[in-house]
Amino acid sequence: MRFLVYHHLDMSNLSLLREPEDQNHQTIAETLPDKEALDLLYLLTIADIRSVGRRTWTDWKAFQLEQLYDRTRSFMDQPRERPLMTGMDVLAGPICMTPHPRN
Image (tube, rainbow, N blue to C red; front, side):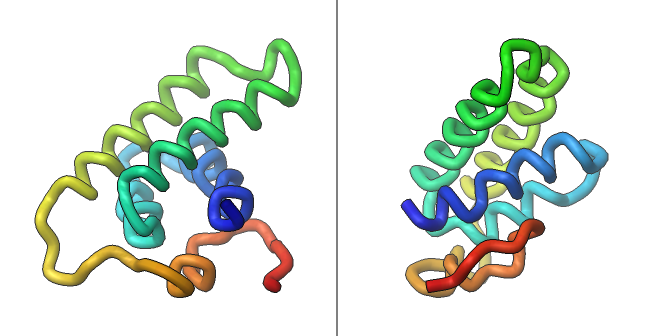
């Protein structure tokens, strides 16, 4: 749960503030322990954006976030030489673009 709270803004920032052609899906995938974490992170990011205000969630934001989610999911489905990060490695991951407390 802590991972989701710390990183949901990262998914939003990577999907909305960067070009879709960037390799940002790989950045996210390498910090996630599994595909379930990606699913939960995606849903929390949507909920957070929508909770800001009635007009905050737009078709463009939905499209950008969905594209990042789909590219990340596809990347995670591919076989890789090194496993995805797990456990405490995830909490210490370099992806966080916004400061957060560490306990």
